[in-house]
Length: 420
Image 1: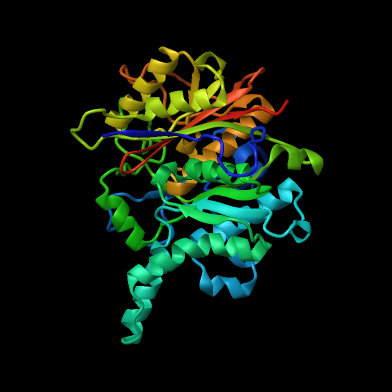
Image 2: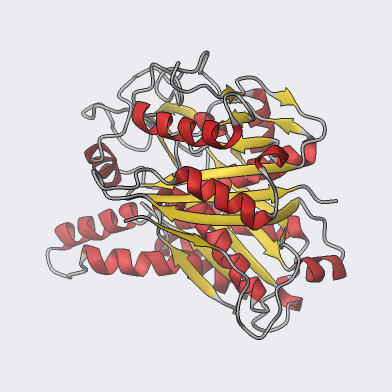
């Protein structure tokens, strides 16, 4: 049985306000560290997918990944944090720092409990857990269970961001796989409706270690191509899986009136959101991504004709791509709206994927340009969509729809609109 939810105004004491605005963006990605470096690489069509270097991948059938290159955490973070964290948390801390600076937020001057952190996690924690098990084996005594490691880790990512920046308002972590980056932003929007002024939100993930890799392979969705230009081809007849990447984006989401009062620049507003859940395999109802998109548009108060671009989930598997194409053509008609998947340059980033797409959508609205889907020359006959394969100028770009799906049946859709 499928369910669907619409993000309705809070029933708390504070009245609903105008759509919240994004005032800061922080990015760590395989094709660029920092928002503007990454965005420039995206518009150039520059891929960060390469042969794995983090560990010896020769024994594995899949050997490509989107690794954040030349990331030296010691250059960005205090040394005391390094023993307590793994790559996911380090990347998230750097992205949060950039987002807050980009938003012009002086965290020391924020009112108590006015700002918080809501992020997403999925596969993160594997490397931390692996280190704990290695310590157990090498020390031959002190017991730290893998379950304790993971339970602690899911909390520490958000907690480290909160503590480092003095953000003592509402905090939380959502775990909905690839859909998590949108779901976290939606939860942040709910907190703003309750009277909180500012949230750091989104997702950053990393699981590029032997233990994490074994889990990815067990999922059966990785491409085994050795050619970075052929390994991840969403909506193509040659699609045979995806490539794993690390990184993501964290955003500063603010109450619109609060942001205006402090004179903050806005990248755009989060105008609508919805989530649905697919039926169990073989059950009635099938895939519900299209329903999520339709509900998100309704929540934003816009029609399909108002949407100027779609940032696709782009699973890179034939059946899943066909389902997404059917959802898009059902809503917009065949080739009825430009569709893009810049994640072909990074790989799928688990909980970091959708928030990075959200950052790309906001920057596309700012610069009036649609970033490309690389390596796909032609879409499959059963995917009749207008796939953008070269950077496309788009004057008049006002509204973007971002789609995401997570393992287990999660579907999320978010509408962002350009600032006036």
